[in-house]
Length: 225
Image (tube, rainbow, N blue to C red; front, side, top):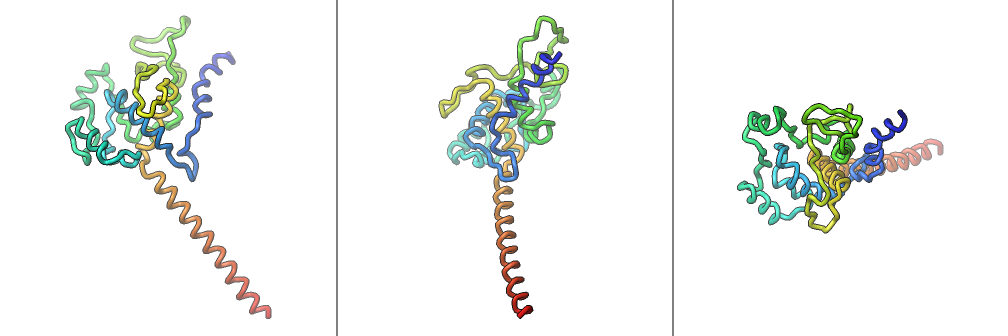
């Protein structure tokens, strides 16, 4: 029983030990990881999942230059200011291609899905061959990260599936972590700007507090005198 529970929690435990630079009040995104994550989304996830809230121009926030952004948009027959296209014409087409289910839009998945980026990474890295003593319903797949260990989504990631421009080895755990980072960035593309503003506000308030203390001491020193 204890072994079974340990196996169930293993992916989440492994993911929790990974670095998530964007967490915490002063966190910032690892843009190299997020760029690799975009490659995973573009080469794998975009075949089924839309990202309607994101525009190609937003990729500048990942560090992509204008030429690359225009080239990416042009490959879809679109302009840089256009939103990412959906892989399906409508929900009817999406259901027909996915056994009646509509793949969720991934624009805000990292903040609307319980567990956020950590769960996404654990889920993508949680697929295993179905144990011999486990019987799954038709079209279900074994995954350690979900309740009941069964999900209708087939394993999307496979070793060496994505070509990383920086030469990073595309292992399943690495791709899972990178695409989770990208989805976290896509859900909150202005997170770093907010954190910078927060640091500036704290610095200003600290300076103001120091000035108030100095003025108070001088005023009361004159009063005592």
